[in-house]
Length: 209
Image 1 (cartoon, helix red, strand yellow):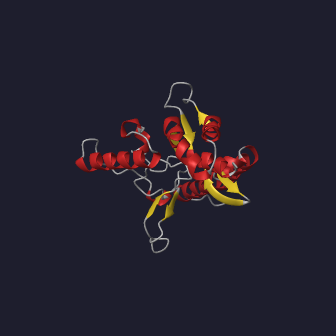
Image 2: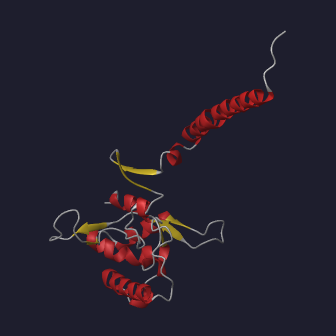
Image 3: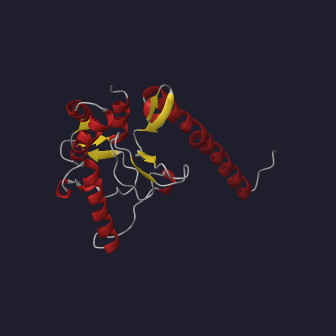
């Protein structure tokens, strides 16, 4: 007659079998299934929504990035930079558009430092785009919660059109038409505001001659 295992041993063996089964299901089968569905049905999104130019990845439509250039006396890659007039500029970023430093400044709307920064940005953007400071949209002077939002308002995009057209030798209506083609309305018709993805917009601008 076979010897019966003690209850405590049987319980441990049952637990071990469950561990192995769930490890196989959740640790192997499920990730493989999700990966397969992503690659087959949504390959662009699954691979980071990358934007390429001549076969080289130049950004992601999910992440805002810097469109500045180094000044002549910057002293190399680590030196100061200024906005490049030939590109649409994104929203400010508290983390310098670094995905590893995603986040906001955590300063409240009444914080004197934030108020001063916003007013300095407003004056700088107005001078850069050649508009009145009162006409500068709010998203041009305030960072998003993540610091990585790739979208700007259509108002801010149109504000930059004349400056970009002049810098690139294009007709203003050509640049404005580019904004119009990339503009998107409110989500589901009532959430948020009209917007345009500045990374995708600049990629299209780069192809415009």
